[in-house]
Length: 291
Image (tube, rainbow, N blue to C red; front, side, top):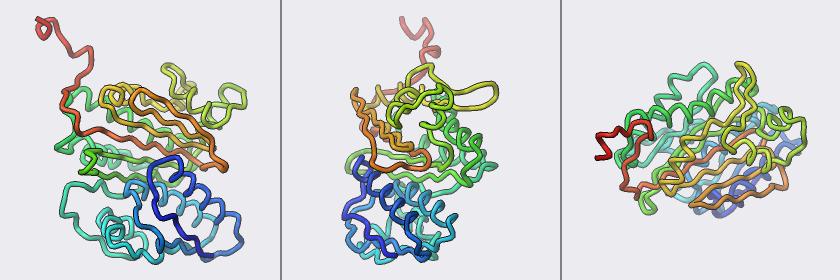
């Protein structure tokens, strides 16, 4: 079975929808040999390697063999070699000549320290990242680690997939984190004993104070500090889980539903590196700083 990717695969509702629909076509097929072709693809956002990698993980669990074919665009091949994604398919990694790559990585449930180091080195330590206090950095790290902790607690996925990219022209740093564990829709509906659609479940989970956490079981998204930072930074957050799409960007929230569902959760965070402000937590401000 051969699947041709679209000409442009971007971090948009349409881009995610295309990848989700591709997944369902493959899963529904009885064919065991799957070719994903880039023959018509002229643009593939590097951070979406995390989404493609997670989808391929599920397909392989179904006993299917997946190969990537016809990556004819040299820029796409170069980026996917430099971020190590194509190493999964026998290609040699090209050492990155610039600081624009946050490499594709898979973290198993017992690799929490490696995940923390990845976020620290590939995101918060980038030279153009907006200035922020040590305590705020710690809190952002904790927020992102909560995504890893949720995936581990759900116990369904073998790996958490991550990848990022620094887009120089747009001055945007993007990090995408994907798990194929229990969806937000499933978590929230189990907790509320309701039947919300995917976007309403994400919306509920993103409201401050709402959490499905009971006892020692984690269930909240844990993105409170990041959300506040993104609002001030004019960045963006997208969350895709089950049939739900939720996006916050520059004061506006957008929700949509997909025709199909994603069997897990995608969190895509964009940081605005044109931001020249310096950030710290409110509790760090002393009276001496005010006068």
